[in-house]
Length: 368
Image 1 (tube, one colour):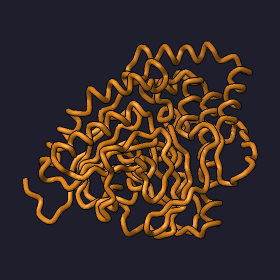
Image 2 (cartoon, one colour):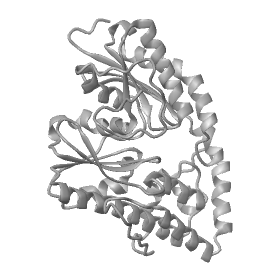
Image 3 (tube, one colour):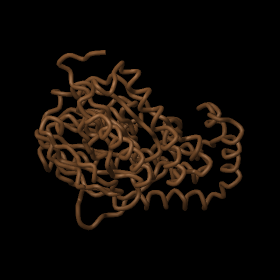
Image 4 (cartoon, one colour):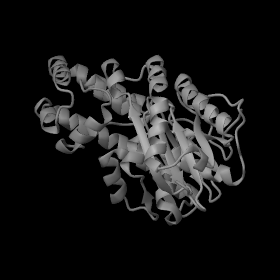
């Protein structure tokens, strides 16, 4: 198929436990987005096992990219570039995507574009909201591996305002869920159950953090939940939920409610209330300090229904933008979208680029 006057970028994302590929046109139109999940592989371990993740990426990368091209109705010759996540992420997982992207570019002569994973999450919102976002904007990136707060200028320069000192928000959700006997990933289950409890039943507090007033810390909250559980001797209840998870591949909301006493539902609601309150409170304070005109909330935690509802109910002097749920979690469409500015200025990566477990977000993210 010929695409006249349309620029197409193939995006590849493999930073953690999802192998993803997508084709995006002109930075705004998603022609295809394919994601191969590894939940079945890692679920039995209660979290991502890096070595297993790398092996699964090796198995999935070729068919996932082929499917993305087929769904978009294009061939390599129709593309204008190949974008790939360089970091941050698991090095072994990143290497699979980077190596395959290099191979495509070496075989076709297409330019290789390195993208920062966090910038990809920001562009998941920009891709959909477009001109509705006013700058300077504030970007809250919250996921299982990241909780960052950035000031974003109109030319997409980033100033880090705050980050987590320990657990990321999504990581705290999953650890608390595991503690309570729910399967991995537990964040969506807690979000599902939170409306059935009293969010003010358990009082949680956050320690004051020295240094940046916009930094986050969720480890103390996780410890407070552990102490609450230990004080109430909940082992029998927790084991019952673990048994339910073993016997049913995907227990329904009703099944989880029946397996969770009201006091525990109150705990879950209070935990979610505390996390959401901390995220939005620090975002609002940063917005006031910087004079932000928009708030972007993105990353896997942006799927959280409680977070979306609370953000909508806040009386902020500027609009709040979320990506659609399918673009909130890791995907390759956001990587391709973030690459178009680099394509415009011919900011291409060489074949010597390496994977980086920790890659600071700046205007030009690839660093060799």
